[in-house]
Amino acid sequence: MKLHSGLSLLATAWYPPKRQTVEAAIEAGHVDRRTAGDLGYTELPVSEDVAPPDMAVLAAHGLLGRSGCDPDRISLLFHASVHHQGHDAWSAPHYIADRLGAHSATPVALLQQCNGGAIGIELAAARLQGDTEAGPVLVTTGDRFLLPSWDRWLTDYGMAAGDGATAVVVHRDSSLPTDLVLHSIATAAASDLEVMHRGDDELNATPLGHSAMISVRRTKRAFVRDFGVDRFTKTAYDRIRSVVEESLADAGLAPDDPRLRYAVLPRLGAKAMRDAYIPPVAASTPAELLDLGTTTGHLGAGDLNASLAELAERNLLAPGQFAVVVNGGGGFTFTSVVVGVQER
Image: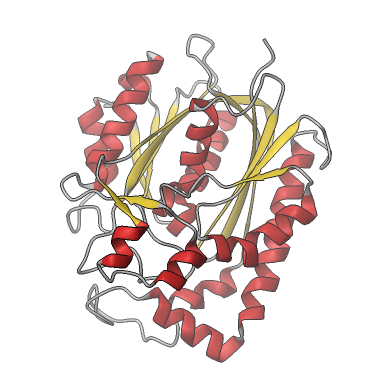
């Protein structure tokens, strides 16, 4: 999406204080040493007591308080998640809006798998471009991955899941501060890859009807057996390269622009990123690759949004510098955003 002008972003992430180190997970038999080495994480945040929507409220409350943004000015609230939010047949985004006092916001749930937070930012940008009177848009994510329904180390290949939440405010209000400027966002889908998370299962009538614990490994084994791994890697390479190049072009940046400081990767395991993400990103730009997920793991719907928060909170970009932040999610959908820090 080419923006008429840059939009302001405020971003933060919230993590529970408890951590499970990789060494502790290996000693407890949760993961073997070889798999842990392929993942490359050092620890994962674990939330046993705080549900995902409450984590999102904590993240958003802190962000709104820091920025001075009145919750009642929020015009739209997107909440993205991957796993169970704490109740059935219920709306987590309405709960979040009510807890925040965002009573003028329209709450919307996003089920875009691991790309949900990124899509929320894209929809927020589209809303602000299409309605010049719209107030700030809040995008939250929140996920936790607990047994018996999800094994954070073994439910999926190529990643281990950390618990946490993010909050991003997208706005164009000069009275509010700016952490980062959003210059462009590009998304491409590969809907034929939805079968990777379905395998050869029939569509059933009840949750967890295929197995008591969610197993993405099982469906991916079926996909590889029927189609081969190259079907995914070739399609992913094409889509990732396409969105990175499109987002850079829409931001007015050449791939080798010296102001482009980083290309930020998703928070997947090291081997998965070497196989699927690093080749197309490196082919699209020589910018330095940045992996921010070694101490968080994969954050469900929140990877890209957490990386925006970390870019801002750690001051990783100097004024006048840019980063391209890349993400993907089952279905499949791939997104690339270009953000920068304003010149002083």
